[in-house]
Image (cartoon, rainbow, N blue to C red):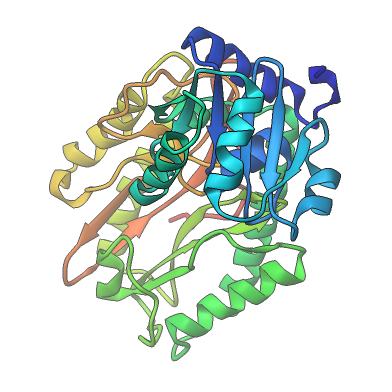
Length: 364
């Protein structure tokens, strides 16, 4: 089958090169995000079987027509009945003696079902566990992906700025989050990319606070972490705002976080690891005396998922490369007082970071 027939020929070709490099007969793709990435199919059920010469989307009757429309270049196989009736037969037709599977997606029970089906058949095929291969390929975005990502970010930025203009004392966190969700929908978003976090005062000391019915008040930090999804691609933005006048302590903590974020954006470059990028911002926060108040990573990759490769944190060992988008989001969290986090998405181009987020930040 010619790779030029595929919707995403370069992605299939990259996976086939990896299959050959790892001396596999093929790869079984079960993760829905990876399935979409390689084939374009966005249905909720199906498996991809990709070998050097074959590319098959196996799905049930609900999605065969959809699969034919979306997964161009893939042979559509309708599956029905027990796994033992179709899975070994399909593997036998592929003619491979080993095939990788996504060990970080397939459940133990599903794997056992597949292995039992093979054992009860006449074929001899080994299922080989593989982890993170597709995630590594997805980390570098092509220009079309960056364009979709930018659209998601633009929607989220505009929706946040509209929402920020409506915030007022007495409004609850939940009400503020709902204003943001309405605003992204009105701008063409498919959905939220994650549950919106709105955290006022002491709630803002918890980076992943569960938005609730606490009322917004003047003078306290409000951490607003939000995102939109557009054609599968996710945005992620955090802004810290204050209603009314910010006191000296808010200004001081905010200024430290802003310095850490802007320094990381300026100094991050292709070739350094995620851990080295994290250290740029962390050094500033630690130097200000808040080493114990910045407990999460500087950032994370994003694309079809809001958290994906690369790891931009203390344990990030993968070198950052051109084409990788990721967040830069340092924060300081003080129990009983509140917190400050500022987050933008950047993409590495020509060795440096280009900022994709454009929502206004507080300036003191």
